[in-house]
Image (cartoon, rainbow, N blue to C red; front, side, top):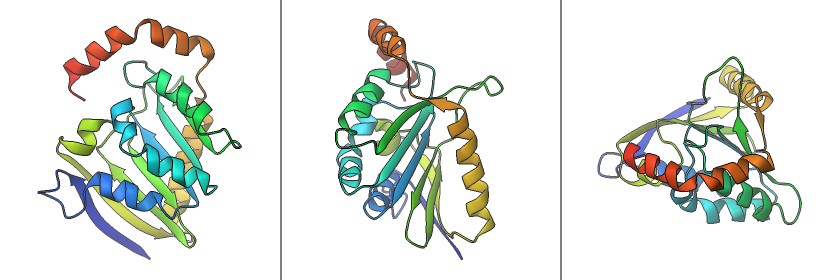
Length: 191
């Protein structure tokens, strides 16, 4: 059985905002997959406490972001990989890098529940403007594990995972050395 709901930003347009939909589904999930083209600290901070609480109750969380430093805050990924794994490996912060695919542009969240999954396919990245002030649109689907959509989204996630890795230490150092230039470029893009 599938159930559909439109979610988005700003709240004046949608009955459920993207941030409300994401945070609401973190609470009772067994595992969480987050895929984003852009990851910034200000966006992550809006869901950090919810994710940390989920990990504390043994929820497994995988975050995939594009490998380009302009798109992904490498220092944030490094900190999260350390901070959220103090009591066992439950959080996997990874970057997507493929020889065949130019960049990771997909944006979706998958929340595994007892009897199925909730998937939010969205235009929103994990950035503050995407969750607060941009006009963003997404569809929230509730799907049984027997549904064909469940098998298809699982294959997409496996493909992303096969082309992802934790950033190397040198990448963190390189990112920090050019962080000021990167943040200036991001500000000009108005993510």
